[in-house]
Image 1 (cartoon, rainbow, N blue to C red):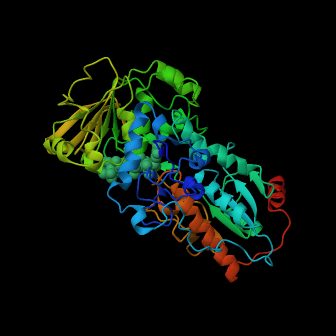
Image 2: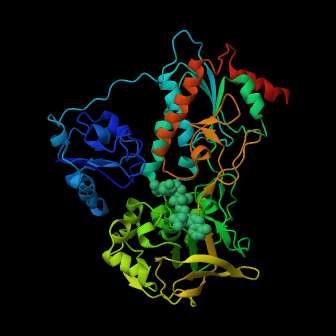
Image 3: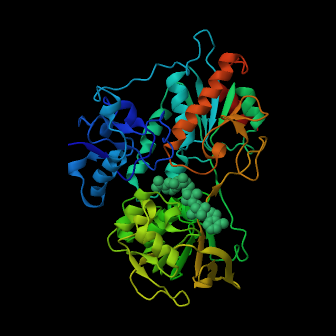
Length: 501
Ligand code: NAP
């Protein structure tokens, strides 16, 4: 019986590199890598060795015949990926043997080069994949910096506490913290404690993996009313981020509208409707758990401006939400385009076919005492309504303008990068302008992750992103564009600088 990849797949392709029969696709060198929602095991080629399950950093891979509960669908999901593809056997006469690509040695620095000193700013997935690449493929000495006193970035402060398997990837990253060629400098903020120039002086290259630490705005009237909050704040609150106070999130509203249907919106909807007893024992911040125990929330509305076929969430996350016991997920069927898409559509629209439907009266408070989540599609937010506190959200759609009565509006419309003092910034995209990771107009500076490409893609997407940036950096060293200078320990030099201050 074959293995199958399930809900928590992080797409970082660690499994691909250990599979002896090349039965996990898409591989990083295949065109649809990065666009599929997850990776899939070909059940006809899998030899059941389990190497992928052992290597998976997020515990997503299991023998297909041992899957239970909501994970059972993944046996079919893995097989379906290969259903309309050419069988491997028809293109390869020996399907059970890896079709090895020619070897490439593009990541090595020639041995007559001095070890470069490279700073990586940011300890989230993007920074850590860059660190891993540098430590594994070069003799670089790495200074790892983070503005927070705790390492982990979005793995620590972004991944929802009820996703412990995903959080486990942090263990893979933290093993690198002990590497003899790596020194950490936590609680160090660029622009406050050390400048871009000072960091550049003490290193041959600096890789900025600072992520996207603010939230996109809707640009609507009423956005700054009390009761209007960014999903990024809610996420940071339930993860105990030091920047977000314990009382930052008010749970006194009966109905909460989440604008956006990305995975962040689903995370927030799930946590706000969870049974607090199920969250006890997770990494949730104690203050958040305490507040959730007295929460008045009965209904969370997920608002999409487009139809169910274009929802931003990934299928595994929607399936998990739909399969959760005790909290129904229903679809508001007021717009006939929604029901038509669900009834005859494929892909993400078809995932909603078995859900309950209802024409919700949005002018009144939620009817039932039981908690639930409602998906409303084809509704663009027009105004956040209220005088001194949010009273509702006015939305426009085919059924005209509707005011959804709600005491809390959560904007889950994406993260946004913030400028790093001393580096260029593209204000429209919220990124640092770069070419294949090399910061435009700033020799020796590189970017990786969301600050490089914008705030999209899960954890594993950062691995290929880091690979590109590190390749650019190494190319600059080997071509001589980036001179490597022998120097004493950059961390000691930084420490001396701090002492001076
Ligand atoms: P996202 O996936 O980009 O979703 C943003 C949502 O906001 C979309 O529904 C988008 O609608 C909507 N939106 C944007 N502007 C809007 C506007 N002016 N009015 C109304 N709606 C608007 O962003 P995210 O949820 O922050 O997630 C960021 C990345 O992290 C994603 O790649 C996500 O998959 C990943 N992530 C993964 C997980 C996980 O795997 N468990 C968890 C969290 C995050 P349109 O689609 O119509 O633009």
